[in-house]
Length: 118
Image (cartoon, rainbow, N blue to C red):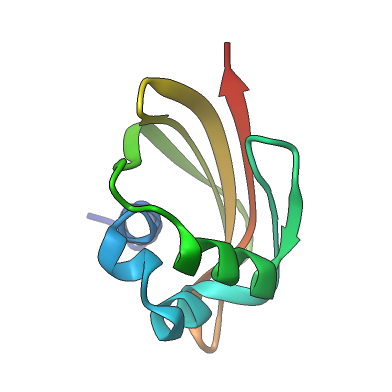
């Protein structure tokens, strides 16, 4: 596996980790994974910053698991990887995009958007 392939796989693994209830309920780990300038546009169209997203994840009902399908990652710049995937939760689907940035801390999620599938 090349270094680029390793980076793409690492980002997909980190995105999958963000879907786990153990990570979604761990504020310290969320602060490690979400960049300080993180912005999310959720499937309901609500825009959240890092603190608001972490607060929402910590309050989330984890009884309905979020499942990742068809993840595709691509390098879009130096230290930037875009990830597109499809999610499913409780019969609802969405197309999701994430932008991951690598710096001295490592890979962190910078932007995320979910668009419902109707």
